[in-house]
Image (cartoon, rainbow, N blue to C red):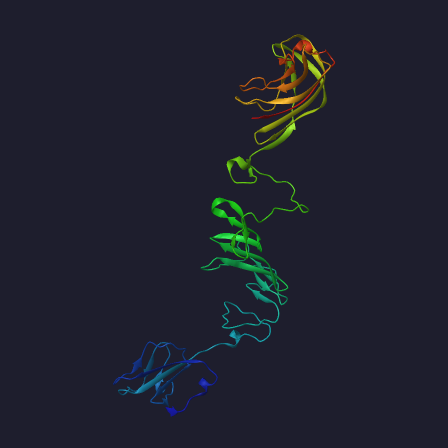
Length: 371
């Protein structure tokens, strides 16, 4: 039977309400959504009795026992249901599935997401002391996506003051603090100085190390531009090492000697410096003919260049009228052989093999040339 009022079903419950005007003789209303046993039906304000005045069992329609009159005002209220097991406990408990929070959420304790073990299996842990931990097997553990504009992705602070930033500019990543930052220019494979506070390039303002705090070794496969960016400013090679001078006659014959010091070379760009201390030059066998040559230079002199270096020639026989000597590539063509040139009032002349005092002549020299 129907009656005026409402049942206890609505007490402290959430519900959905649908009202409509009946047509003459209407006996069914479809297009509804309810849980059987949790629905109330009213006609012109009177509450109907389930199974007596209507039936509602399939969750989407209500069938009336008596046909409705035209313009009867019908209201169908479907009550929302829940189980006690679905309630979120005030203390403890586990939420299975997604948890939506509209507004702020205060968690007094450790919050575990996707795991029941803090810092254990895959999932996230937010401790009550402010530590955030994420673990994923073979997957990215943390992601940030800034939309629309360039700028900071992460802002790092110490006692409230910013000490570092990680950000983005033109799809490149930036990292640093103030004007001491770096930009990773991926399209060109470049590491660029960057001011992360202004998010602008920092040309010629960032130093690598300092006088008191230095880096160790620097390994480069290319060159270094010093004092400018032009081709003339590029230092593309530095090399230093040892070499073995070979003393011989220009037209035949060989010599042995005692190395007073290791013969060394230094190559900076296209500039080579050689040095050697050769003592006690001694004939090796016979057949020494022509002029004394120094062979075995580590880098060949190219054509159309000349070079002369200092030499100390001790216990040697000079031509008459010559008083001092230099070491030189005497040919303007490509050459890998040095000669001793005698100079003075009657020079210049190449130092002949006959000028070597066997077992006693010393030869010390340095020469710099371009390659």
